[in-house]
Image (cartoon, rainbow, N blue to C red; front, side):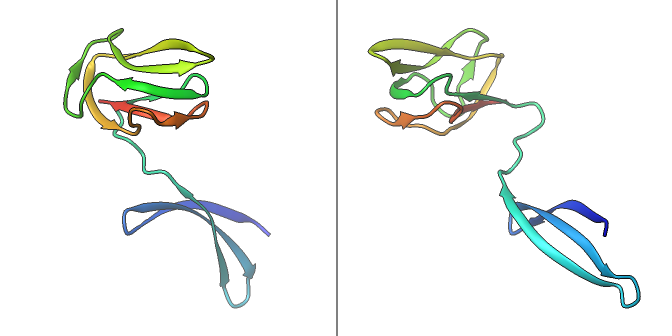
Length: 114
């Protein structure tokens, strides 16, 4: 049995679907939804993720604000130390996924810069 995987968009959500042929005589097809995939950001955007677990103590930018590479965009407190989160590229803040006081885990999305 040979299964093929496809990404299908339904009502704005992207799903990974695996289709497997179960019978070559009647061409029956089995479909299984594997998992929902996060919407893909625009191709020119850069996602900023939490480098460690901690608490966001300040977000220094607003959606739509222009930022320069190296500019501090948020402050993350971890192990009683304040860590500056900086913009990795020049661009415009497309989305902010965290609020002041929110706890985050390693790899959580913080901001999106396009």
